[in-house]
Length: 485
Image (tube, rainbow, N blue to C red):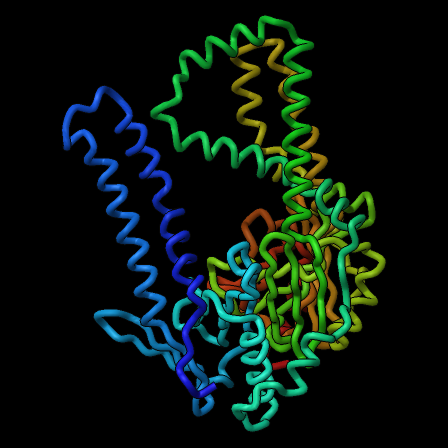
């Protein structure tokens, strides 16, 4: 692959579509403003002419970008050259490449193309991938991946790209996959409804200047007067539609989800409309996190994340990665033992002392004490009913206390803690970037303290906090982590 190669011409269209997506909102504003009043002269059509000129400019820019972009593999490097007035060159040593992530959008599939994102151990820009090939043939992408695998194994990279490793990558049996029933559980127990409703409000907020809110409120008042039953039915139907949309969206995102283990890499593929492939080297995994929301906890399901040292900030899927988006909790020990034999997956923790309970309950209930007092004062005596809000917050504090725990097994620290979600984090000592302990004046009186561990994940790292540990337990953990031990 030492000859200069160009991206597929569809790359120019993809660049055009990407730029067009950013211009949609300004274009809508111009279009609406231009349709006001009668048009009598050239200047009245100026907004439309400007829009057309911008579209032509964006299309030409996309074509020029495609023409000037070349890539090749030469002397153990992936060499990319691009730019019109300023010729830019980016040479990435192959042994520095950690993974190639593939995705197939709607524009790629009819032509058998993929978009390739090149992830390295230390990206020059944490907000984006080291390099991106927006549209190349799938066969070329697999060949490029095979060359990188052979280079990392110490084999000489040659121009014979039809190596055996490439075949192995395609035919490896899946280690894990999601069934339709699993995706149903994932969809119905996620917060997808909230995301859909929020998305609708965010979309409508883009048109605040054009929505006649006064008329809408008047119509809404008439609608409410039509009866509580009708309003309830309409609200129920609205939520039902949002719920069905969230289920459909989950199937689109997680359809055909499967994991393969290829050499020392985890290869994940998913998606019905846009097919994505993410590759994570096993040695880049910094920690394993098991997450349970209250509903999934009742049903015996959980989600397993792995924290990845690579990846970019804007690519959430490349740092905190959902290894198993939904899985029966009783299965994770067997699955993770096969995948990470050096980790000890257990659920046997040393719990928090009894005197921590009051602090957890008080810490949550205090959030509603001040608002409750204000409402009671203003609407006495009926305002007292607002005080009932302290009950669910107090219960949350109780379950946070129940979830708290820690355990050290050889070179591994496991922490369990809860916000609303219950998290169980397993971390190797060598992967911990920092371990902080602190205690407030109130904690010192109770002989308690707090712990916070940070591992490398993305730009800022991932922190696992746990509060109100026994002070001697805190000292035990700090001594275990100390280099003097």
